[in-house]
Image 1 (cartoon, rainbow, N blue to C red):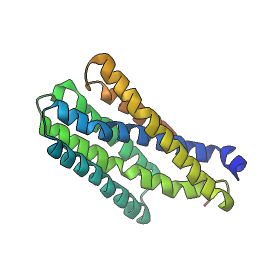
Image 2 (image 1 turned 30 degrees about the horizontal axis):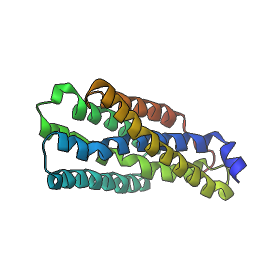
Image 3 (image 1 turned 120 degrees about the horizontal axis):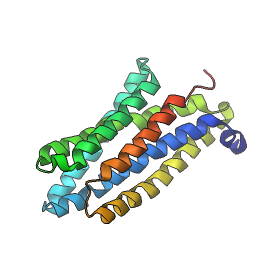
Image 4 (image 1 turned 180 degrees about the horizontal axis):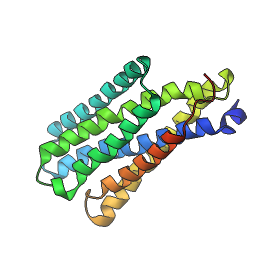
Length: 194
């Protein structure tokens, strides 16, 4: 099963696409408490703001399930998720919005909510891109492994860039690159069976 899964392009595409999502989601959401502390917010306020941003992700996941059930193209949901993640991190971290903290926070909430379209869509796609019925579990497992790799690699990369430039203002470049790769992979993902 593993050989069949790893020998097929579809499982690789959804798995790497998931890593592009998870790397940036955890990098942005995971550093929110630090960013808020640097801005002078109390731990309690930072915790509440971060928790709400995390909760927003649930809405995107649930919406994706409902939209897929209604026949919306999975690829379009992935496009919407990655485009929104790229745009909202620009708003959230660009020096152009430095004096607009409410706009930055709303961008983070939208980043999480609209980005939430991606995981549910990828789980739905995993069933279709698996080489056969016997490899659905290994396809989902491979997707989870790559998601974990993204979670492991994304935050340190963003932290390294922030440390190198002396702030979070270039975070959007890293997340934008992850979104670009996610968009390219999404455009090439095809169902291998009905």
